[in-house]
Image (cartoon, rainbow, N blue to C red; front, side, top):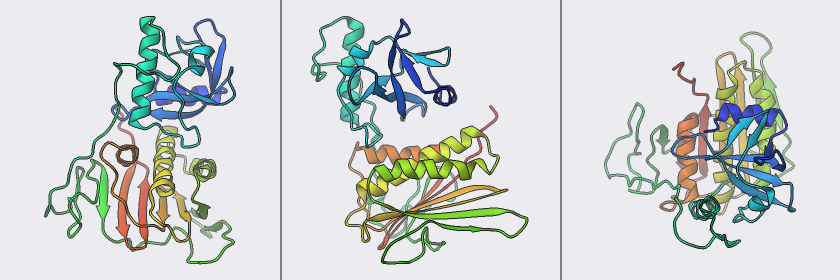
Length: 317
């Protein structure tokens, strides 16, 4: 199994994926985590043979000389079912098609380009239905908000749920643009720095947001693994804000990051109506991963949804 730590090392060395003979397959542009292990399950690569992105499983991959070695040629990878590279995620149907395609490669069968056929494995996550009247829990584990409609909010371990957000807005209340970044910092110790953005509700904003977050998180001195987990969780929250906020007004999402000696906090707010995730849909997976990767709080209100993320210290074991 290729771990997150190993993938980060490969990315720092150029992010190259090669076949068994050392020929280039592609360059990693995104890592898709397996929802069960929270370790890399697939990588999306800019393919060395075709013009576009392709998806490569890591089940049989190994790390060698700073590259990810896979038992597939660039031609094999180009023939795999396509994923939407701009979305930076895979839904359960795509995972099923990819598993089916690559399983047939190992079986030596003729593989149709679209991956049709039987077999394969579905890596999906189904949300457990909420029970009416269950009070909000104070510790880890599933939560429930009093007064909310049963089934309208997800119930996931590690994801704290609230019905109202009374903290600092992720971006100042300015209804008309332009909306430049806002920076604030302390005059002296204890030091802290705050940065706020308003991003257009398009998926390219998610990638741009992640690039902006990393330099600020590096100021904290926290372990690289914790920071990477926080960035991944923020990416899931921002993708949800883009894809699932209903009728956002304005059509933007806001991001606030605060860093200091005590750690890091990221707030992501959209301006649309909450929509419960579909059973088995990709959004349920995103909410689940947020709760695994960070200390996460989800707040639903009439003006939009707010996600607050804090770094989660990794256990020494």
